[in-house]
Image (cartoon, rainbow, N blue to C red; front, side, top):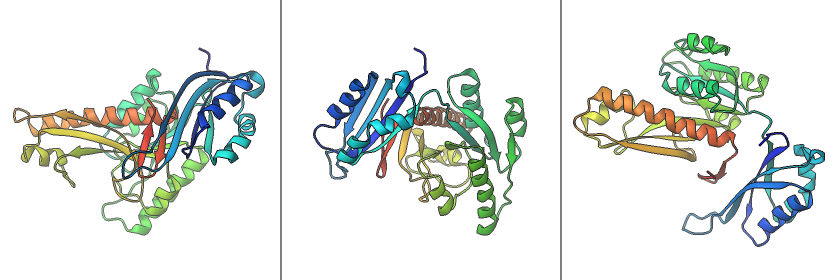
Amino acid sequence: MPIDHQFVLTLACRDTKGIVHAVSGLLYQAGCNIIDSQQFGDLEGDDATGLFFMRVHFQAPPQLADAATLGSLFEHARQQFGMALQFHALARRPRVLLMVSQHGHCLNDLLFRWKSGALAVDIPAIVGNHSSHEDLATRHGIPFHHLPLAAGSSAETKRAQELQVEALVERERIDLVVLARYMQILSQPFCATLAGRAINIHHSFLPSFKGARPYHQAHARGVKLIGATAHYVTADLDEGPIIEQDVQRVDHTLSADDFTAAGRDIESMVLARAVRWHVEHRVLVNGHKCVVFR
């Protein structure tokens, strides 16, 4: 199906009667063809937010095929239901900035998916606080920005480096920043600037192991499950709203290096899923958690 004139509508509002009817009715009256529609009301449990979420993939007639016109069409419904809504034109490829330190498995995986067409984005730049993967970026024809941070850098030095990243995000009109094993703690102002448009990946263990060589720590403790978590970046380290997770069983027959290799695979897969779902507008933040329409 041609992607021209296709849009995704995402919305969130207080759950009440008539929302689905209003949305589908407006699209029908405007001559749009609904391709797929999903909705969720967060109404049960002690942590329920009482919010309603909806994602509608549709094709618009030529005279309505821009986000501003569609927004005007929904203005009354937006006010009536108190909707936070967005229209995303699928003909426009999201622009993604990748950030990396010295471990390149997630970066390499994302670049392969992008190059093969499995990840429909544009990647105008890669940022590294080490130069380890500059050759990889060059081979893919992507500008590499080496913005170094020495061990023990002061908060002022780190913030100055972050401001360079923010300027790059602005200049390149970046929609999403992906921390593809970018091993730096981000400041609160930087997290606020990127709120809802920065994704991080980290390992997941039970019990949890932090610091250097976590897979070796897990091996030494006889861990039986290793995994990975992809989440939105917040000022609370590794505690942002979770988009995707996965696990793999391991046992005593595997070495610490085997643990590490398995962990790299899981991290790459989980991050790739989270990035794809985000750029397909399938993820809506619901307080401290996410609604993911698959």
